[in-house]
Structures are given as C-alpha cells and as structure tokens.
Image (cartoon, rainbow, N blue to C red; front, side, top):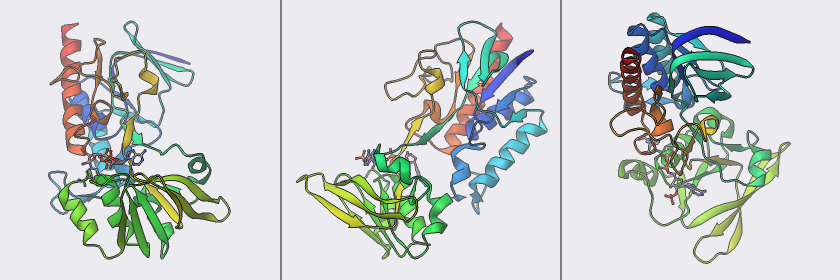
Length: 311
Ligand code: NAP
C-alpha cells in the first residue's frame, strides 16, 4: 500500500525526543505523523520514577510522563501510529519510509529511534530471557520476590536496578567486570549502604544455567584477573550493561559512527543527508537523559522547519 500524501515531516520513534519533536513540529504546522515503533514511549516506559525531569518536583512515573508527552503532541495535531518502520529510502526527496509493505512519503524525516538494552551474547540468555533473565528491573522485579538474584554491570543503570530490586529480592549480588565502577558516586553510595546488596568485582558471567520450565538456577562466573571459573547460585539475572542505538534500518543510508550512533553536525540535529534529522539517544552516546533527548527533539523540529522553509 502506498499513501500518496507527501507529508511535511515523518517522525520515527516516540521517546522524549520523538514526541518533543512532534509537539514542536505540530505547532509549526508541519502536521507530523509519528511512527511510534515497538515500544511506544521508548525506554521511559520501562522505568519507574523519573525524579530528575524538571517540572515534576515530586517525580513522575516514566509511562505517565510519556503519555503526557503524547497527549501534548496530539493536542496540536500530531498523529501517532503504533507502527514499526522496517526500511527507509533517503536517496531522493520525497523520502520513503516503509512500515512492512506500506510506503509513506515525506519532505523531511526526524529519526528518534533511541537505543535498546545491550546483551552479553550468551547462548543461554536467548532461551532464558523472560524465564529468569531480564533487561528491565522495573518490568520484572516483582517476579523475584524473596529470591536471590544478580545484576550485571557497573554503571548507573546497574546501580539503580540493584537498589530497586532489593524491594523484592532477598539478596542482590552486583557483578562487575573490573575494579572501578563507571556509575556516579551517589548511585554507588546507595548500593554500598544497602545491606541486601553484595558486590563481586572483576568477574564476568560466561554462562547461565536453568530452563524455561524451572527458571534460572545459577551462573558461571569467570574471574577477569586469574581466569578461574566458578558456579554461583541465583534465581534471577538482570542485565544493566548499557544500550545500543537502534539504527539497523539506517546502516549505509545515513552516516553512523563506529558504535552505530547517527552522526549529527555538532550543535544541530542535521545528518549527512539534507532533510533527515536525528535526535535523542540514537545520536547521543554521552548524555542519554530524557531531558537532553527532549531538548534535541525540539532542535530537530526547528531544524526541519527551517529546512522546509528554505526549500
Ligand atoms: P553505561 O554507563 O554504559 O555502563 C554500562 C556498564 O556495563 C559498565 O559498567 C560496563 O563496564 C558494563 N558492561 C558493558 N558491557 C559489558 C559486558 N559485555 N559484560 C560485562 N559488563 C559490561 O550504561 P548505563 O549504566 O546504562 O548508563 C547509561 C547512561 O544513562 C549514563 O550516562 C548514566 O549516567 C545514565 N543513567 C543515569 C541514571 C540516573 O542518574 N538515575 C540511571 C541510569 C542511567 P565498564 O565500566 O567496564 O565499561
């Protein structure tokens, strides 16, 4: 199916970046359509309290905040669709955006597809994901009531997940691959102060034991200093090892850096293809905050508006 309309702006992705772009683009009469992807609202829909977004002095639940973003965009006429963009063709204008075999045309495209949880790449994780292995403490923590679990990682996400999971688990062991943590001091201190959390440093998980029927029973830990391996009993495994950008559809089409993040001109959201803009975590491996994503979403809409004006 081809929708013959040439849209002024198509926004791909619906986290803080995409929906802020939608608010600004809608208010600039660009009549944006938003393809929300497989996780409408983005990563904030799998977090609990957001305490650092200005304007919410008492905090706000991530999913609630994204509902507010979407409502605000729709109030100004943005149209949001629960559709996943599988392919794009940016070789000439109007640009083509595909949802399976549906083709959509646009004079400008804002890419805000965000990032996804990184995996360890173990064979067992594929089989046991959802059966004791999880990348989302907020989503799955409740299932680990009074159980002993591990959290892998040494950044802010791992610290946050470990602290959060102590609400349910009887014991949380944080496994980190080296001596120093990447996380901020305040997050590390919270973990160190929590009597339910133990820390194992200089270790990596090299296998996970269990079955879909009975869940996780333990992991194989490898010491990164002496290389020795040992079994470690646990009933749940949470990954907090960062994220990778969702740019599979854009490989070879717009310039990406060596980690797969979209390259934008410094201080703007312009990509190497005129008329294609990128905002949020898909082009930011450094700040990765809701507020910075929202800020860059605003920039993308303004950049797109200026581009369309100049056409
Ligand atoms: P991150 O900062 O990239 O940390 C990832 C952690 O996972 C690192 O400790 C890393 O180890 C480890 N890791 C990566 N790949 C691994 C592997 N294959 N095996 C074992 N360990 C592995 O990611 P993040 O913690 O998700 O944080 C991302 C951004 O969001 C950061 O800017 C962070 O400050 C922010 N954030 C903030 C908050 C908050 O303030 N409330 C909460 C969550 C996230 P190495 O250290 O050895 O590289």
